[in-house]
Amino acid sequence: MNSIRTRLTVLNVSVLILVLLLLGAVVFVMARNSLIQSVDKALSERAGRMMRGPEGPRQRGPVMFGQGGPLGQGGPQGQGFGQPGGNGRPGGDRQRPNPDRPMDQGPFGPDGPGVPFGRLRVFTLTGKSVGPDLEDPFDPAMIEKVANSGPGFSTVSIQDEPYRVYTYRLPPRDGVELGYVAQLVEDLAPTYRAVGVLTSALLAMIPVAVLLATIGGLYLTGRALQPVGVMQRSAEKISAENLSSRLKLQGNDEFAQLGITINKMLDRLQEAFVTLGKALDQQRRFTADASHELKTPLTVIKSNIGLALSQDRTPEQYRETLQTVDMAANSMNALVSDLLTLARADSGALLLSPDRLDLDQAIVEALDLVRGAGHTNIEFEPSAEPMTVVADAQAIRRVVVNLLTNALQHTPEEGQIKVEAVRDGRNIKVVVSDNGKGIAEEHISHLTERFYRVDKARTSGGTGLGLAICQEIVAAHHGDLKIASKLGEGTTVTITLPAA
Image (cartoon, rainbow, N blue to C red; front, side, top):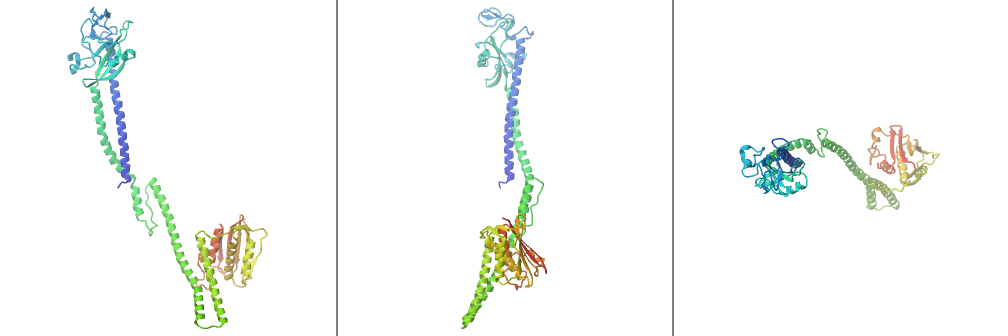
């Protein structure tokens, strides 16, 4: 499994390898340059000592040419140097041992006839040797370069061995420009060997560092990801039947914050499951109640039609049968209409045509409908100021009719029902109150539930959908419906709508 732990470890180790390689390259270059600079400094100092000579500053020039050589006290004579010779060869004493070379190693140093350690060679500006052995320049290209500029260093390979060459122009003597260039060399093999040892050490350290980093990375990454494993094991215990369980959290890092977020999500899911469970229970109850309410008129229709068909009847009896069937059909039609209204409200497709509406006028129209059914004990006093809202006139009228119908069903004939519209800041309230028998407190919170009835025996009539429809219509108008009741004292229903 390509786990995060493995990926993080591989990434960290890869970055470490890259850093070590870059660091090793930098150390290699810096060490190599530093050692070569040390060699350059030693060559420059040795050249300075040779120019001063063993007798002090006045005895300038390489001692290998003797007292009468080109840099001795005799100076140039004729076409030659030192004692008269005329052939351009250095005169005077023959070559003496280099003071910088061990006396027991002969003229060439420890490597035989190769390039001696600290060996000096002198040339004219054209590259012609002025030494006793007519030796070639160590680096001919530097002769011309130094002749036109200052001293310089270069690296050459002689007999497959690296050497550092210091090329410089000999200074004037007694104000006379001599016109000579000297080259001094030193073996770079020891320097390169030291750099090689350092490189080998660095290369040997890289695998060890990578191994330690891998082991340490796996351990530290495992420790860092331990809270994830704890949360995973906790999450495996969570199911639809056990939504109360939560993730176990450790520390206060990003993983803990993620766990807190997941726990909050589980809280919301649990609430959603509870709400869904209630909705399913309500739906099952709704289906059962709707089936029961539809079954009653259907039974009436079926029984009356069956009775009419079972034997011959008089026209008057047929008329009574048809009237009973018509009443049952009207009851069914009203129930289906109410169910359709609630279904549209649930889907957000409740058909409304909002417009400016005078609530006093809507209440008067609702009273006319109720009073037309023979109910006259309802008190209403129109407001002194306009009570205007933006609402669907038919829907609001239906709400008022439903509330009045409920009040009439639960208020005795000698009781009193009152309707009024009052302004409350930016809202307008429609209050329907009665002094009927009232409702027990435990039922109040359930009154707007569908098919809920305080009278479980269903002797009071109705379908139990009236207040549910009122609640949906008022909510669709961004309003509020509240019910207050005391047993034996009466009930007050208050509708709050935004004023226009």
